[in-house]
Length: 94
Image (cartoon, rainbow, N blue to C red; front, side, top):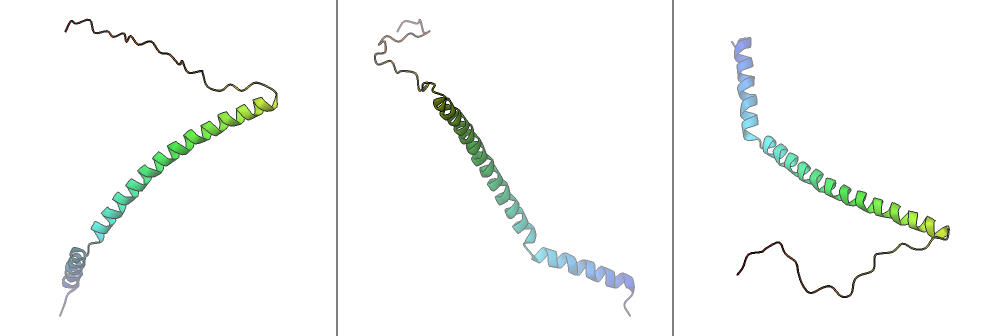
């Protein structure tokens, strides 16, 4: 007859054999890798959303100022003519 010890060893070996035949751990590792990649992409997108939200806040402040009658701030004017001589820190002779 089988003793309790033999049955326990049988089930332990059976359990090990079943786990050896499955690729569950590989699937779990692949799912974890995919989840980490998605989280990284989500962080990048959230950073973009944060930047856009700051821009919206700045624009809404401009709208409020315009409703109060203040002039539009706008961008600084572009200098049309730049000087052609470029200054460098390189004093070596060629």
